[in-house]
Length: 493
Image 1 (cartoon, rainbow, N blue to C red):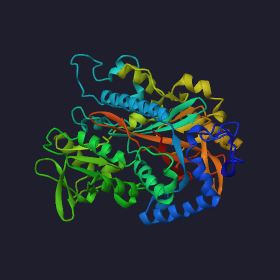
Image 2 (cartoon, rainbow, N blue to C red):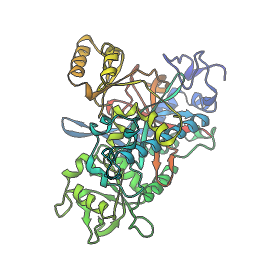
Image 3 (cartoon, one colour):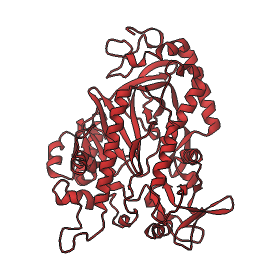
Image 4 (cartoon, rainbow, N blue to C red):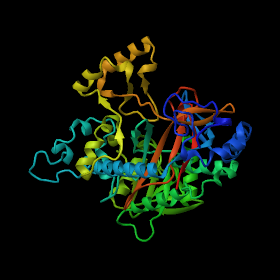
């Protein structure tokens, strides 16, 4: 298509746009859906938004945020215009995310390897990558996410990251990885339900693009990876359950959706019991069902705060079962050492060291301010950079230097100067926009892409990436907790 009319007639983006080029012409990948969108027009798309809103309210598609210590649930907005990812780009993204997941799992196995592997060698307990001079030792020992006690919480050969969520941005010259989420990454359930909502409200939109990947296919892949984590004592088909802290969790909707889709029970701390053989079981409809693998969906730091029905701290109950070879946790606690923001810039070196490969995906230039040379290089440039706490996630604590007032910048500089080890700084990425319906008008809005990978017997990117989109003009914040929305993501055949 060489030009635009109707919805896209006055559409112009301040940066690279995935649907419309600099001359205002619709890119070829979006050609099959633009006629259907034009036929719907702003009125038809607005009606679809209303229909999707009603369907999602009925299903309870919400996310939670804490406001003054209270959990407040919000609708999870879905834009009616899909985001299209060409097959060649998806193939590259899948390879890159799988590669990072394999390398980070290798790093975690190295960081938590059994102590004293080489007797008589004073450095035997240090990770191999540290011994080889590839990684600095402080990257492990001083990381806020390092948990020495977690060394015993993975079974032989178990991938410590069963489910990873990598956040990517599309820059002018290709895709880059923004961050790795390896603790309890969320969003897979929302990617699945987004397709349900979009297809129900806009069935005709799908007619022009047959053969799309189905997000629901991710469920079987996830279930298989979790089953692969089963402990050695497991006989027969592994018995799975999803471990959550319940309605107080901000992703409670997703927990229920995934458990139902996989056909496994939900386990909460008050439903877990110790078994005489050292394992655990979960109470389901009045019965107690043995469990081999718990898909853990709340923060490891909260495990000790919960008790099982007879008053045993949950971390003790589960830790004893894992060490007895009767239970597996997925993801394994302690993964924060690998998705620490300071670790991020070392992932390319990990890929080369552990895998003997060159990185498939680029990373954002990053300075670790705990390093004196890195800090000196950017000390006077914080107003040009993005500053992040090393242990933050979900957009918490991120400061965009270019948007700071003079007073805010002075405060940031003072905080960093006082505790530089708490921060990293990154070059801002001028990432892509996608067409988004705003007040009945199609407008360009920034979007990222969270790609999920599962690691069991093999490591696979699943065909259910989640697009998050900033809804405010000019905003770079796509997190749902910061006012962002979402889109149905189409992986083109």
